[in-house]
Length: 513
Image (cartoon, rainbow, N blue to C red; front, top):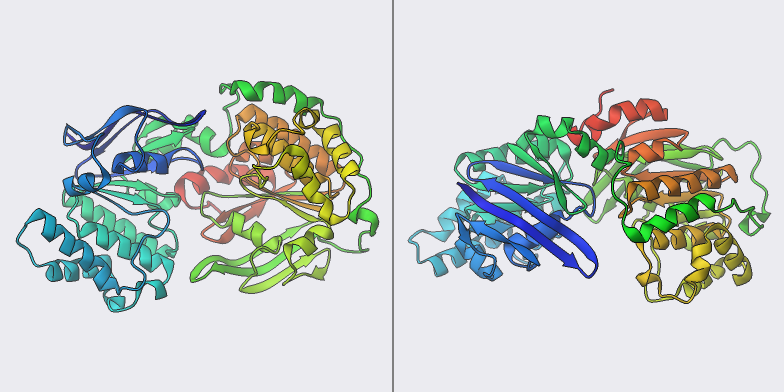
């Protein structure tokens, strides 16, 4: 019998179907991987299992017992423990005390006769934290803090352990050690459910894998079976999925995007002529970047030629979005050089870069949901372009926005929000455009048509860097591409060459060079 079973679980947030009749088994004595693209519903399923999110339909069973109506603390006492994608440690306590708190609580409510201090010391050693056992947790690197979370979860003596992105912040050696630990834990009879962006960890540690996409399970099997599954490749790479049903609100958008006429740019920041004899529009040289103690980029070098479309690809957590944040001035690099048309721009603020023509469309679109379409467009006039010119260009490229000009942006469909984000960016007449996950939340055919707009933008003498998970579509418009893994660019080549190497990068965590 499976230790944990989710049966036909569905969750809706308003009109969004986050989980759609998801059935999942987590057997005792095995590591079960749960993977899927951004927004697939993985963390929502974790929240359903632990009682933080009630399902609209379906049931959660533990050892055959229906626990769907149980509160989170009751589920924890029944044997379900978890870690969180966002760290939830006691920062002012030591490593040992973090684990000891859980062990003491376990003894208190269970009435079991064991010594919490002895259990704590065993777990600290087992997880490999002996060297920092007396250190305050908030002074430790994030990867080490995640191991503290794992040890603390084990101190509750769970039957089922849910791990949400446990390798974030770990280096490659630490990740391999974590994979070994998970195999050891499952060998003792523990059921482990692993949500993880590092495909190398998932494939090496998991006995079986479930794949979520748009809230549905699309594949179940061994690591080898999942890697070979065409539906999984489509979910991660965006290829061969053109027949997928399109949400009704996106159907009309396809025709509008296709018919949108190219717009000739009116001078704004383009008044200044391009520097002569400059080889690269944007250069990142040996960039290292971090969030606090978390090292994210390790010697990244990327060069974008004028009028070139460059695709930066890789699995979740590889460092792609961080690279764009460094390029756009949102995150200062620890070391390395950023150049814009030959000028060193380290330390330049994002608004200064935007004024000289480096514009970013962030992941999640970056619109103001509580402002109308018109008010969102008005915000871009800070660059010096008139509202009349902004509206003229936006509505010429995307006529639907004119119909929605008085509508709150947060009530637009996903495709319309992406149109607003692109229209606002293009109103500045950029020389370099940074696009982060253009396809997120959109049906494949809508993504295809948005990329036709990208190609027309590039034809207007704009250099573009695209960070994307739907690699199939982006490689169709790119002039050059690269694969990023573990904060490094591992492979650079033509779109065709990169396309051949992608499957191993996305689903295996390595690049065949």
